Image (cartoon, rainbow, N blue to C red; front, side, top):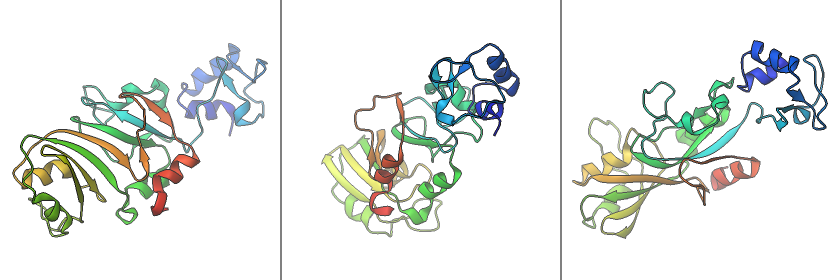
Length: 235
């Protein structure tokens, strides 16, 4: 792939913008030698304004999504892309969220431009566990865990029962719910079906991957080891 197209596809600007960057001497090798648009050099030997290029297509990252942001590119309010370098929004192929967290839910969100990986993660066949920490408006009654684990629970407007889900109670109004599917607003609807209301919701884990010490609003790139951790026993 020509260098101009390669760098433009990573979101650094249009092809015209990138061609201008070459003319201005902003694209160099690691030693600071100016590169030209028709040069043939390894990907990791390219620098833009003295910084290595972002990862090529196949990039995956984790984001600690705060409350108040939507998983959208068009919402008029705050969107998750506001938390990333602006050029990430312009990548081709595009960087997409792997599933969604609603505006009022915080926690672990994966993003990738690898369509095959995205589908592998969200596929019902993967049965990749997702852990949600819920703060509730009312005390749990003690009957919820058995119902959630039964595999027979039906939600309003649904035509098939929910897959079994594991409830771990921390105290009467705080619990962790582990799901292996991802229906619309599923956690909130499950607690609503037993007469409770979720006041705060946080996704702490997907598969074997957790947020660790990643602060709200921060992100980091994932490597092959992280993806192995993500799938764990599901690999």
